[in-house]
Image (cartoon, rainbow, N blue to C red):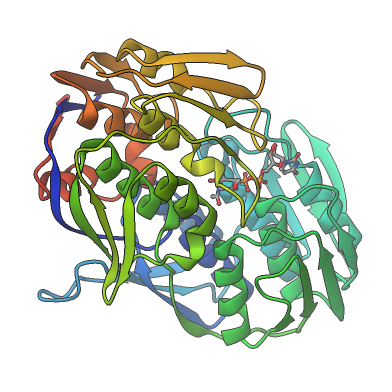
Amino acid sequence: MDRIKIIGGERLQGAIPISGAKNAALPLMIASMLTADRLTLKNVPNLADVNLLARILRNHGVDLAVDGKRSGGVAHLGETFHLTARDIVDTTAPYEMVSRMRASFWVLGPLIARMRVAKVSLPGGCAIGTRPVDLHLQGLKALGAEIDIDGGYVLAKAPNGLRGARVTFPKVSVGATHNVLLAAALAKGETLIENAAREPEVGDVAECLVKMGVKIEGIGTSTLRIQGRDRIDGAIHTVLPDRIETGTFIMAVAATGGDVTLQGARATDLTTALQAIRHTGVEITEVPDGLRIVRNGAGLEPTTVETQPFPGFPTDLQAQFMALMARATGTSVIRETIFENRFMHVQELARLGADIQLHGDTATIKGVKVLKGAPVMATDLRASVSLVIAGLAAEGETTINRVYHLDRGFERLEEKLSRCGARIERISAG
Ligand code: UD1
């Protein structure tokens, strides 16, 4: 298994291109199942999760062609995918695939909507909590799907097709919103989703559906009104920039000091996180090609945050923020309200010398003057990148094991950082 070796202490200087958002690219790829026409997606990041979903979609009969990157093209504009689901040849999403990536469960909505039948394995993904799917099923049942669970599979059917309905989620869920939104596009009549997730990635999927001919009101709000159609068109859509990658690199610069421009980054998708990071003493300014991050050698102000659904502080940046606060000049408190088990990075950060106490959903971080490099283990996607941030700020050598977690969600991470002066390299096992 590959490892990443970091020699800490270098300031970051230069430019980093921000990739297309993983969490938008995945549901956008799934949206291709709604139509027999071609859906072209631009700015798709080259990630293990994207490649795995491509395999799953091919299994269902989706034809995928990828344009090569043109030399001299803009660095942060990723690959172009042409997806055509002329015929869905298989309505089963098997355990071997869905268990490796939770987002693949979202094929359920489009499959029942288009094929009126689906068999989808219960999902897997990062081990950051129990992560049930009750909200997905509640929403799809409201649209008329009959659902049974048997042998670890969701068996769904809608012999007369789905019908628009009112779906009121008792809790905000990104995935359940995607699943119901995608299904509603092909349901008969109007669907009203209340308490929908407002994450920018949900908005991006809705914008793409609008290009595919679906009428949707309320994009960007918690109430989505969707007029279903019996036929959906193809479209061309560009994946929005990855706000989690953006936030991660901002925190890397904050941790090491330096001056870096994040090309293609958007401030509007990150307001609460930017507020918190600015409070620590980092300068973040909007520049014509993205965001410029500057931090001189001054100490980091301790800062308290609580994760919340969008527009709150994203849970996907919680681990990185903790790595940053590990060296603040006082005590910070981080409360995780989305996932109950998303603190596995705490014990690994402690190996580098961080002083963190955990009580239930709350971590209290007493800033220390120095972190010291050590061997650590990546436990999930966002936790693993928090170890990279801590390693960049630590004295000496840090080795991160199990880096396949990183490859699921961060495109060319070592390359992007080393071009800005970080001493980071991948050590291949083979
Ligand atoms: C998505 C993101 C993930 C992010 C998370 C929260 C993708 C591919 N993944 O995950 O990076 O951390 O949103 O912003 O976009 N829940 C239920 N029942 C359900 C569904 C969810 O109780 O049926 C709970 C979950 O356990 C969790 C909370 O709702 O406590 C939010 O989860 P959800 O928004 O669904 O996360 P994902 O869509 O899996």
